[in-house]
Image (cartoon, rainbow, N blue to C red; front, top):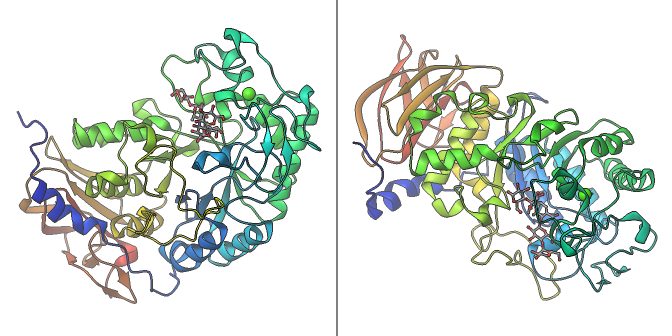
Length: 481
Ligand code: ARE
Ligand code: CA
């Protein structure tokens, strides 16, 4: 048996380390993809607006990211943990991440860099503070009282289980009418509440926002979200957070009529293939695994919740994490979303902040991981853009942890997650003959490659050694003249 993992530390650190090198970001804005063909989302979790803006200009635009997903911008309860963002107290665009003016300027700057903005939007609930308090921007509130916005009549009090809290996820009524971790649950069936929520979202649209990540969607009937959406002033992208739970009555598929839905099974299954099963099984990864329709799914290796809860690969897995992201960005399932984290040792830990809880500017590699800048991830965004519209062909696997495939006529990826190098093999790509930049190990710019070059012969083959826990990727957007 070819069972998993007696991995030498030296091997992992030595070879995988090359996958963690930051990409060159000085390159001029890419010719990149035509507008509309850039699908990849990056979640800049808890970044402040000033830092998001400069990242759009300096990295996201040049590297071909299509969308940036930002953390909730509305006023929130005031405390240190990151999750205060998920406890709204008013809809003023005024938060630890910046002011309304900074937010507005960030949207404009990102648009100028060719990057659209998706806003994490909290509409299921308000705060979870039993005794109320004063919000970030000075608004005084009670648990069920948000002056000028909501009063006691606008909330659910399910009164089950001796409290108002959700206990049993097998009960649809409870999931949608009780409180998620004590968060005051809005009556999203009420027209007043729907209008108030749509007014907030329309305010964001007026600032130029392109889409919404609908937080806690499972906790609202799909029809309530549809009714809010119907009140929006213009069409906008929507992705709903509905965590698939085995045996639960509320299913992700109920929400596809409103827009896209996050496919939570993707990251868990991918981690399992890397950690204890076989990459060879990924041959039909996607809908055949029972997932949401590809055209309506957002796929991710990890997000801000799953990276804290376990069962997925995260930045802590270093090279293996880079390989999983490279696979995601090369494989045609769903819209890929790349995570970008602040590093933490405690689940509740605040993002790097000052003494008043204001989020500090991002400095990559000092409190912030910036996975989206790792060369093996950042350059695969260009791969994803270059191969849009193509299918998979020329699949190869060794039965275990070495796989390879083409995106027909446009790109080729081989991943070797074995503990040994694969030497003396040739790979059939079907790509036009020529010299290609291996974008896993080099940056392509102005017709030159800073790393190894792969030569595809006139019959579409190349020969190369693929190191242990490493990969090679080539595509027509990074072909040398
Ligand atoms: C915090 C404290 C709580 C406290 C509360 C109110 O941790 O102890 O009671 O504040 O004072 C985030 C944090 C929470 C935080 C909350 C509010 O993760 O810890 O609570 O913000 O500040 C379910 C939901 C899913 C939700 C996850 C976390 O279905 O929607 O739980 N995810 C989103 C965001 C979170 C955010 C919220 C929602 C709330 O991404 O970051 O919470 O806005 C099964 C089920 C899932 C369920 C999961 C976990 O898998 O299938 O549906 O997810 O269990 O319970
Ligand atoms: Ca609800």
